[in-house]
Image 1: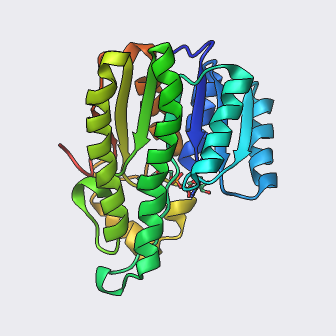
Image 2: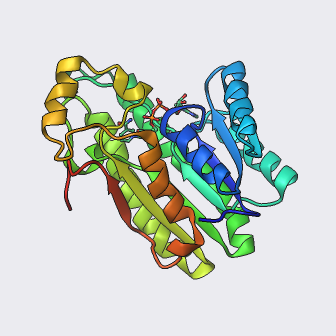
Length: 248
Ligand SMILES: NC(=O)c1ccc[n+]([C@@H]2O[C@H](COP(=O)([O-])OP(=O)(O)OC[C@H]3O[C@@H](n4cnc5c(N)ncnc54)[C@H](O)[C@@H]3O)[C@@H](O)[C@H]2O)c1
């Protein structure tokens, strides 16, 4: 994979899967911009780490649910690097509860980040991809969006929506030289899943044919492939990185 002369934007890129994606794209030559809601010093630390690895990186404090903030980020990337070739909509949150007990604000918050956030980021970046008649959009869904999960009705709804959005967008932008695909991870070792109780982790592990949790880098490799020129005839698809948890 060669991303020389390409620019990537990775949302929620400060840690976990987003950071791994930024690293793989950057190590293969892309200039990488990450944005996150984390405190500025945390984002700066991540950017410094990326730079130490020889990656040309920029970091932004910006919330994907805030249209104006995303607009400013995209404008700054364009002013600095002139283009955006790859957009990875990675930012996501969970606020788990059984549906009957789920709070209105927790339902809303998960959809706001997982769906509205993708809308704002894609809308903003797409304008510039259309001008250059080239682009790779990769949306991070989840195995939960396909199979559902107890206690995650909000999250499953958001992640299923991502798949419908990806397919519709793929059909619309195909004539413009732009592809849109999704990656649906299973259970991956990150801060998001660390907060699950040990017995829940163990129960899930029994359902994973490969009998282990995935690593962020393993998701990042699938994203990088879809982001590459080699994946030019793939659009509207989902790559499942889940150790066999769901087989479609
Ligand atoms: N870890 C898993 O097992 C798993 C499985 C399937 C899908 N996913 C998805 O992968 C993506 C990355 O998850 P992760 O496990 O690395 O989680 P994580 O919590 O480690 O990282 C997510 C990042 O997104 C950021 N973020 C949250 N809200 C944001 C907002 N409004 N604007 C900008 N940034 C925001 C967070 O600050 C964090 O840095 C998410 O979309 C998640 O739903 C994760």
